[in-house]
Image (cartoon, rainbow, N blue to C red; front, side, top):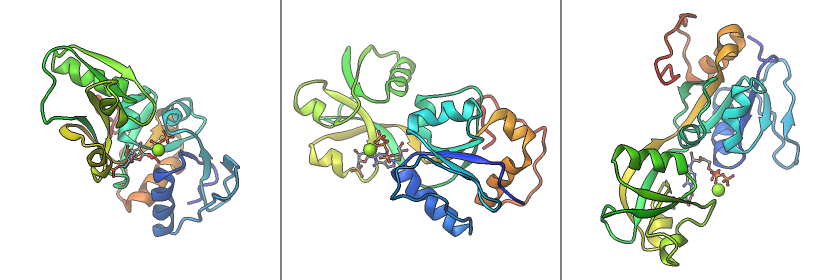
Length: 222
Ligand code: PRT
Ligand code: MG
């Protein structure tokens, strides 16, 4: 099967590192010259083309069909959902958790402020718990917020927990467990067989896929 008709969108950083090792494991030629500032690596017969974008833009690019496929953390997918995107595989790397953290191991009492770059995930979580919160959007250095008095709690990504510990913060609860997900444009998934073939190659899955597969209520075939 040739992949010359397929484009996949990925972000630099952890996701690109994991994707490069996955490509190497599966014997796919890695097209990205990581020393160049180029953002588009054209497909050749044996390989999908790669489009480099900001993580949060990937669901949009895939939803619009600019890229057939994308690789993003589940955290990004939950924060920036797109109704034209299907989650087609858990790629099992970039594992982490979105957590509620604070200076004490105590759930907020009464209305409270939460600093986060995951505004949607945080708001949904507290809505489910019917707990009033004010979400303070911050795009980085979240761990500083409780230390400098900006907000008593944060909702942020944790892997080893070292960053939280260095700032004397305690993980109160896990809101979401995340790993890298392969996402596909809904209509390209159904109409371009090469798109499904990329999933099979990455997942070592040779079983035939029912083209009328039921994708479930949340746009997922997992
Ligand atoms: O920088 P930009 O905002 O563009 O993107 P990004 O920082 O989200 O990119 P990147 O490459 O850091 O992460 C991309 C994806 O990797 C995220 O969307 C997650 O799905 C996943 N991932 C896995 C992580 C981590 N592990 C992780 N540890 N993303 C971020 N971190 C951060 C965390 O916020 C903490 O500040 O790394 C820091 C170290 O974590 P500890 O707990 O190991 O100390
Ligand atoms: Mg980063």
